[in-house]
Image (tube, rainbow, N blue to C red; front, top):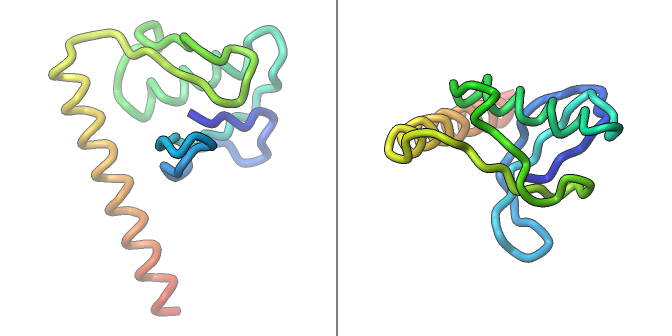
Amino acid sequence: MHLTPGAARPGLGAIESGPDGKPVLKVRVAARPEAGRANAALCRMLAKAWGVPPSSLAVTRGTTSRLKTVRVGGDGAELLARLEAWAAAQDAARKVGAREGADA
């Protein structure tokens, strides 16, 4: 994850290449990076988007960095299905948005 705290427009962004070339999900939260508030906001946002309890998410690497690793607890097969469905919906929404922008 690449987290932008203190964002005016919170939300989940695109999956892009990170500094090491690996894919990262861009996420913006309104919370400031003070006392773990931005990390907590990240976990709440991901939980809502992915349909999992917020308590099943934890930042395991990068607690004070913009680049983070988040652990998602639960049944592996079920989580994989949820994340694949979420990723497919995000991809479809981007394609629709790109097509609408080209028609304008």
